[in-house]
Length: 159
Length: 184
View (tube, rainbow over the protein chains, first blue to last red):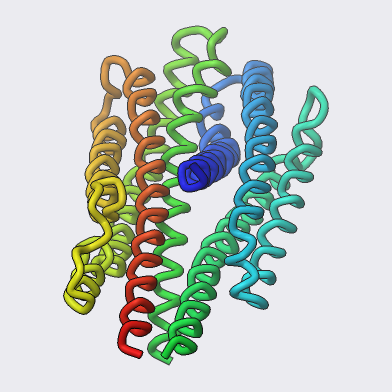
């Protein structure tokens, strides 16, 4: 049962990351190009509609990130301990940056109209998200390396 | 030094695989769910103009992401091939003169990898074919929805492959220790 739960929460975490990162990329890079053909007033109105739907997506993603992230951290805690200090450094960077990304996203999407420089801030948030993914990817490597070292040590002690 | 560079290359390859998958999945979801909702009240010509421009730009993303996903997927496959092909388990079975512990298909990482790779290839081909050509297919949103479902299955299969691979590594390790204890 624990294996199935582990697979499910990891899948949920990855899918949520895909939706959030891809969605932010779409909002920063693709939507402005798509809206270029529209007149000023209509463009602003459609832009607001995009933002409204996107807000629902991002708020749901943050909730799912928190639930699946907490479960994954608890489930892998032993593996993180095996790879100290590298795993803790990467886990800290991953969680800390992710919380900053959530805060920026929530502030940017608060209110009915976008703040000035919202697109630039969202682009910055996209870069931060890419760093969060890099930290997560490295963390997985460090975790497996830590476990491998622990296994080798156990085998050596048996020998 | 070479070991470090190889590790960095694997790390970069995995990172690119994930980032390109996020662009493909997130872009598809956005195209399929957010765009139609946001432009629902516009006139037909405006709606088509937005769809056409977004598709024109999304095409490049899909093509580049698909190429990177295939290349990095091949690199990851080469890296984990011994686990997928039971080389380690077979070696342990020979060493212990006992039948291998992995009997069920569900605990064979190679099967999960095959399912992930084949379904992933189908999803990539659908994404590329949807963005190829001057005109979109007859029901683009429906196709996108289908592809999104396939992509979610692909991610599930990737997660399951990794989990089963770790279990297999654990079993091989336990067998090694049993051999060492037996030899003592």
